Image 1 (spheres, rainbow, N blue to C red):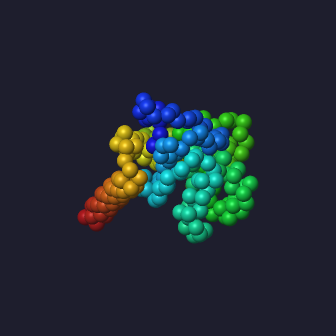
Image 2: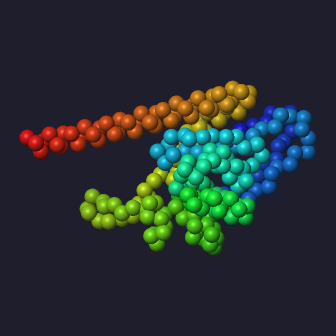
Length: 229
């Protein structure tokens, strides 16, 4: 979010940037000179399926599996705090890194890494690890909490995802509207502004959930009153 084409002025030196595929590692960018302040590579967020923001952090050089696992270890230090499913656009790379580094022995007891539905279609079909362990909607019964059976208006059964796996992508789309303003801020102003916006966003999500819960409770009380009459 802090970098992009056209960000430099005409008299500034050109910065090297490369697109990072979601299912392939990308090397860290090496700079020849350091006469300008460095920019952070990206902002990483952790969201609940409802859209509430749990945590965020700035990654300095790259969105590498090492940085992602370090972020997760900081946010979820104990087994009791870890979620059942962790949805990441490059979950297969994070899973491979976790297995190689030995941290998967701890995380496998509580969590499973899956790819969000938006990026999963772009991952290679030949990647056995990704297709077998990171599928966000497996139909073989291996993850019954991810896929549920529902019925349409005609009573026909169909499978659907139980959770919104694109909550972070939707949050990124919303934050993109502030990109032109945030990239001109100082570090302190950037941290304060981003944290405040995420705080207000989470408050709105919680208020919306509370209204939905109250409306459902009111509907239930009306039904019970009609039955008693």
